[in-house]
Length: 335
Image 1: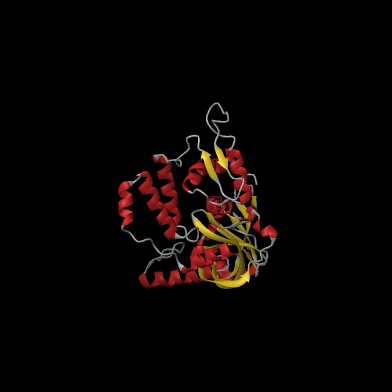
Image 2 (image 1 turned 60 degrees about the vertical axis):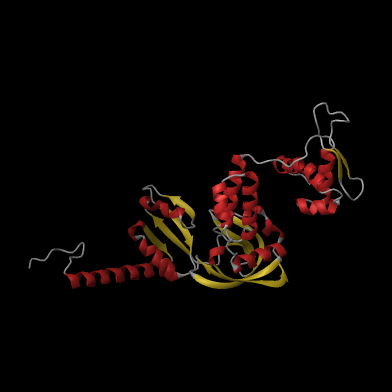
C-alpha cells in the first residue's frame, strides 16, 4: 500500500521508540495500535532496516528483529525517544483540536479534550489555557451526533428525521452512510439517500433525529467516490425548476443559493435556473428580492410572487391610511 511520504515519515521516526517502549509486542498488536495493516507494518520495518547514522555501515543502521511474530529493537541508532513538538507545532495542533470540538460528529469530544490535556501537559504550550481547561468538564457529545458517528464507524444504515432547506420541510428517510465531511465550517453526513437514489449531504444541525438500524449500509460503490464529498447542492431533477432574471446589482444572490445554467445578457443581467421544493417558500424568497430578481417561469410561481407583492402593497396602503402617511408614488392631496 503506497502512502504519501508526509504521512509515513513521522510514523517511521516514532516506530523505534515505540517498539523500545513495548518490548515483545506482536506485529498484529502493533499494527492495530499504529492504525496500519500488518503488511504495511512489515514494509515499514524493512524500510527502517536501511536507515541509520552517517557511514551507513552494519554498525550504523537501525537493527530490528521481526522474523517471528514479535518485534524487538537491537540497535536504535540514537532514536530512543519520540519526536517532540515545537511550540509552533503544538499550538497549531491545539487550535485544530479545539476547532474539532465545535464540529459535531467528527470525533468524540471527550477523547479530543483528553488529547488536548496531554499535549498541553507534555509540550508546556499555552500553560495558562491548560490550567483553565483542566477544571472544565468536557461537553458531552449530542446523542444525534454520537448515533451518526457510530453508524458510519459500524457501517450501519440510518433512519433520519431531517429538515431540508431546499424543500422547506421536515422529511424522514433511510440513508446508507459513507463518511463525515467538513465543508465551510459545518459538519455533514455524506450518505446514499434511498429515497432520492443518489448521494446527499446532510448537515448535522438540521438532523432532528437519528436511529441506527441493524441492517448494514448498502451504498453503491461509486457513492464512495471522493468527488461527491463537496457536492453540497446536488441538482435534484425531481424538484420543480424556476427560471430567473437577476439584476446586475443582485448578482451576489448566486453566491448564496444553488443555481445553474447561468447566461449573462448584454445589459449585465443574468438568467439562471434554481430548483425549489416548496412553492410558498420560493415565492416568499423571490418577493423579498423585490425588483432585483424577476421570475420568468413557471407560471404558478410568477402568480404566487405577484399575489404576495399585491398583498404587501395593500397592507402597506392600509397601514399608511391609518397613520395619514402618503404611499410612495401616490400624488399629494390638495386638501
